[in-house]
Amino acid sequence: MIVIKLGGSVITDKSSYRTFRKSVVSRLCREIKESGKDVIVVHGAGSFGHILAKENRLNDGFKDEKQIDAVARVCYDTRELSSMVVECLIEAGIPAISVPTGSCFYMEDRKLKIDDDYIIKSMLGKGIMPVMFGDVVQDKKLGFAICSGDQIVEILSDRLDAERVIFVSDIDGLYTSDPKSDPDSKLIPTVDKDTLNKIDTRTSVDDVTGGVREKMVTMLRMCNSKRDCILVNGTVQGRLLSLLKGEEVPCTRAKSE
Ligand code: IP8
Image (cartoon, rainbow, N blue to C red; front, side):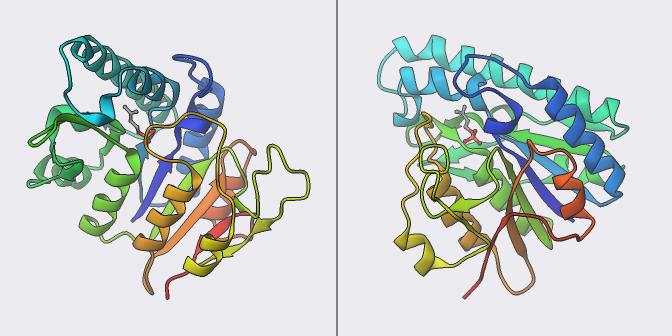
């Protein structure tokens, strides 16, 4: 099983509220289908989640009544986004069902809990892809909190014993500095804890669940001798497909100790 996270930066325009990149998502879904691999997709929230979540400090948990409208709005927006992603999967010939994280599961102090994975495994057993996504989730300690798609990826990879995890983003991988502002920055093909500590991974885009550094830390935590963890650019046509086919592509791989 391969777990693929379609990042918010690739499926939406993160700087513009509720802007879905339909043609990019359709192409990525076709690439997944064409690879013939056993894949489960998780997606981020992008501009369908982060803008309002940040404005209303939803990741701080319940602080005042004024946040409640925003909780409902963000849940509405992320569900709409997920329906659009699932539509692209179905159009590509992949039967998929959106499984809203905040409607099916809960959190405890910002940690996602999936006590019962029957829904997920039952769909998979029937050849249906359950699609989970970054969402506002009810939290037993904080009232509610933001669950990032990365957290979901981490849990699913363990539960489904994934041999590979691919984070699809809008950059080729991890760079020595921000490639959007520094023309001399270089792609790092393999990253370990030491390399990560030495580089500058600040990003300019607002993100309530962390940027590239957080992603790398997650990737390093998830990879092991049996599980590969890779960050790849999904905005380049055919790159995900090549990676899935086992070809060499520009990307960053997390290296286990
Ligand atoms: O885009 C964040 O999920 P992510 C979810 O995977 C919300 O970090 C609602 C901001």
